[in-house]
Image (cartoon, rainbow, N blue to C red; front, side):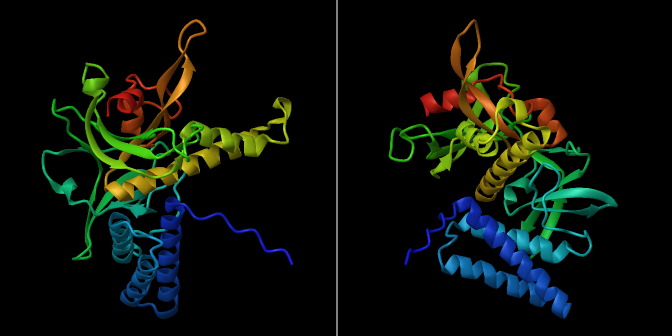
Length: 320
């Protein structure tokens, strides 16, 4: 008798999503039965403890992120009509109604947002017109405060951005053919510096070592999955829409994952990619594979798919 093929192991990103989904389903199911939000809260906390005990999720920042999301949901799900569903084109933690208008809420447990002078409060909407809020949660007190978009103030008093840069440590078994990244940097980026890449990369905030598909290869694989039985003449608008949807979902998951690890709002995900820049000249440049859909960020960093003014990914690769 043939044994069934093993299912592929869940990635660290998928494990987080799985735990979040289970915890919120548990909360809503228990509340529907008993109409007691405190009991539902306690039951849902048990899901997080199970994932931690089994070591399915071991990173303490991820654990804090899950408790933060659950605490926010517990306190606000009725008043703000929260749903743990994706807003159009963006994976916020929750969507709901705040001050009578559709809103997306990103939840963080990072207390640094409360430090005056370190962050600029940027009011504005997402590109779909929905309001955007940052919910800063105190887990111990099970309390939260709402803020607009918070972006870091750089040393020259300009507003900066947190950008995730893909890299690799060298030719290892995982990235021998350039398919994966086993090194990621979260940098503070200042596009208003008026200098070069050395000035634009103001600070390396965090360094991570996760095995993740390199962005250009992920995009290529998604495209090939949808078009393997097509030729160029029958790639329909529906197929193109499905490709765009899958690409957005992948990078939304990545942005959410590193947002939970860092507690910071990530404005863009970038990597080096070869592009024709002159007369048949090909150079590695920094491409934006994902950009936060807040209107302020898109106006000041640019759109998804664009080449950045500063080649910060190459700078990080060769200088760090």
